[in-house]
Image (tube, rainbow, N blue to C red; front, side, top):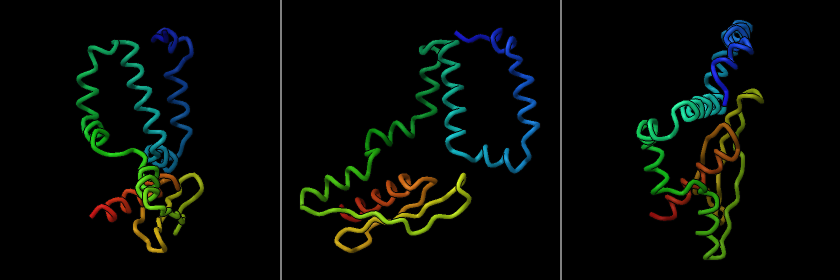
Length: 147
């Protein structure tokens, strides 16, 4: 198990400070807004807590912190594209996805995608990846089909 002693042996604190000082303010802002970086940092923090404390002492706090996502997962599909495909497949219909717009530099793009069913746009979505934008569009299309 990694310990504070390992971090000290690797001079981890100095290395972090040096790397942080080497970044300009715009880079720091970009990293702090990057969903993958934030997810990795949270995962590392939770992993460290688990390794140091075990599951029992932190379980209630973790469940409380993620209660909204847990509730969502209990009542919603994570994969709206598959759900839409299955929903339409029962009637022999298909969904077609299209990228409407891609903005921003390659490392920080935003995509807008649409989903069409029988030539009619039933949903659109925005995301940091095409997949995320398509998932949002599929959710919107499912909502439209179910009402």
